[in-house]
Image 1: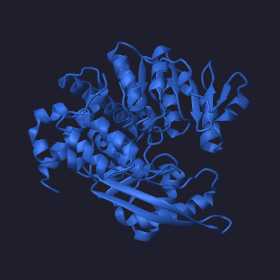
Image 2: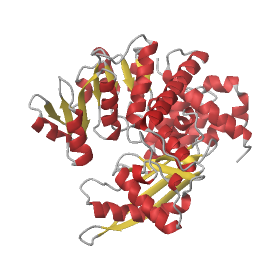
Image 3: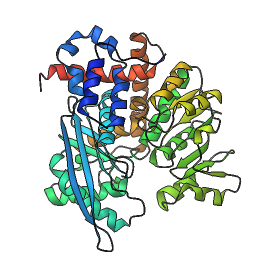
Length: 449
């Protein structure tokens, strides 16, 4: 049966639709959380009295600005920049910046809304926000990307601060882009404020494990789900979509835990390597040479490249969608279940459509939603902020240990909350309810603001 929004919550959702027309990803993210909240209002009537859900669905601040920049031929381009500061009840706004042509306000709001609950689940003092631009970094020179980042930060800097709003990277924004933005922030403000951006280079305030954190964290989360079911990664056939930062380090950690990854992808197509992916080659192609994933097949003749292929049609036991939103639809989910998938862990944000989620829940597989499973990235960003605040640098081993413990805590919190609210094993309800309650209690405590 498809989840229904409780009758007390339905009018709130209708108002969200009316106030935010055309923002379909935002509507999807809000609905997915609201479907879990009926039982919470029964237990906590004060949340309804104080209109907590209505307030949580309305960002504290939405910033949209013009980003003019010049390419290497002297041509002027205009992009649009965004920062949605969604909720600061638990700490400064925290969330990545996405540079991709698909970016518009609805995408940023969906990501920012998810970020509120994800950040809450980490147990660390960070609020939720998100930003980005419709700028496409693909095919641009380093100098063009630098000029764009400097122009972007020339407006954004006035809204940031280590106690106010702390961005990080997301799709299209890695260490290079963070470096250019940090340099411009420092230049404009005349302050070396390392805690204002995370995902920094290791030589100037970055944290070990930050690069690996989202992929490692998602794998730790799935490992915990498997252990509850008396299973493990060891010997499992795994599919990972994407070939960016999240996918690469998901593959790395799965290999370390004894699993075998056979697929990865980019926006052009899919690589299927039955004997197991060559991770060093993927790193060389994507992190160093910035090439397309189809070139993998030039080095491994036994690997198959499928242009515009559907990665989820290839049978696997563990699926880790790590590319972008809504990449698994209902049909894909049914195919995965039919082919014997036992666990799905979302490295990307909202990569499964509502129809797909329904298929996974009804099949009773271990399904870890993004706001829980991919919280490792932002958790390690918060650890980077801690190191910056005390002018310290931790070892890789210590930071990874902290990350592993945070992910286990998130898993246990979701698992226990799902049980407490009458839906054992349903990590969607567990994540939504646990994330919401913590933020809601803080909002009640802070009064009507």
